[in-house]
Length: 310
Length: 254
Image (cartoon, rainbow over all chains, first blue to last red; front, side, top):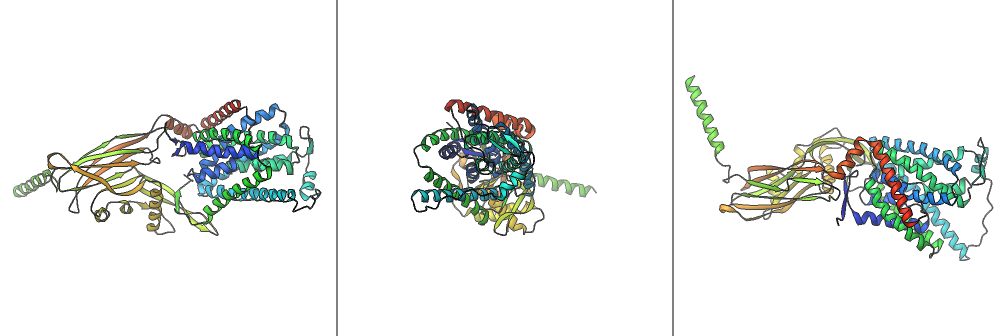
């Protein structure tokens, strides 16, 4: 059996077990922690020599496959708020279109790779830092070292802004009343991130739905998957059309590993403690962030690259 | 007038006679390469081309592998505050996509090749560098570093071995490794005789590198029918996702 496979768009030969193994590891983490693997997959692909623009676009393609089966399962369980999902999706497609155009312009200028990396540094830093602190606090509370009661939710500026938005609409499945502008704008931001970072946006979308849209947890995952699936479909087609950076051979290799890893991870997760898992994931996320940050600030070994990131 | 014509004819005859004499070192170089074509297919991970031939017994040989000439635009990085990002674009012309110099065992061939104007460093003479805020030598050095990191530019010492050939001649052999990042095109392999440090006759052969089968189909589709390619990539991903979902009865994650 040949151990190498040639990626026709990346123009790069990769070790087959390495790519499937990479998919497996990210899938394992995805299954363990119940978060998307996209935000880890793209940086890891970049570390293994795949051009950032190809890594991001191909990862979007891989997420289409990964989220399709999940969304269908949640749809059958009745856990998808289609009305909310449609608003998030419209915003996501518009934001994704904007993100693809930003990448196109920056590729012309030669700084698309920089934007992808710096966006990752910021997002991984925020998400990893938040998770780390939150998990640490939870562990301390549990061990009795911090016993301060949780503060009551306050009427924040954000809450007042959301309430003042026009066209309040009732979302039956989620049981909330909200202006459609909120999911449109937030979906737009997620779509833009999906295009730039090559992620589904689940790791940002879930906290957004829980903390900003106040949706109940049981519909959050299914609705997030609905939005992620269709946003990534749109982003994949646009990246293929505008930037020619989707390598579906790479996407398929990753998918083989990630689906298997996700199944094993999901089974393992039931045997491990939540907060310890969270701290482990947060540490991993922060390490990836530091690695990417160092690649931006340390003097590169090679100071010239092919124009357009290839 | 007749005298002038006679002298001219004599000179021409002399030149023809001189050119008919074998080059310094005796008989011309014999060169064979195999395979003469490399297919970049689904499982391509680079290829090896065997280079063999014969030279006069007293001579040595160096082998150059030269890819098709190209002209490309490059991003040059510079520091902006704490970050390294693209500071300018620079056009480089007449750059072979691949260059290797395979040298024999024994002497300090790097020094000999330098003296003959062979090797990666000497490509500087043929490369044309567009306007840049940096000196051309610096740009060339960065460019060579980039190509070397991809395994596309190399001076390889002790790559040519000798054995006894037919008729008292010297038989040489070398293996040239084309890396997986080799692009399609016609590559030239030159074998040049070296006689006491002086350049002797040389012979060339061509090796064709071409994308084939699935790789060519996908590359063509992604370039020429982008929308169809994008929709196909999504359709395949949906099918693969549904199949694995059925296989594992997965609830998935995102």
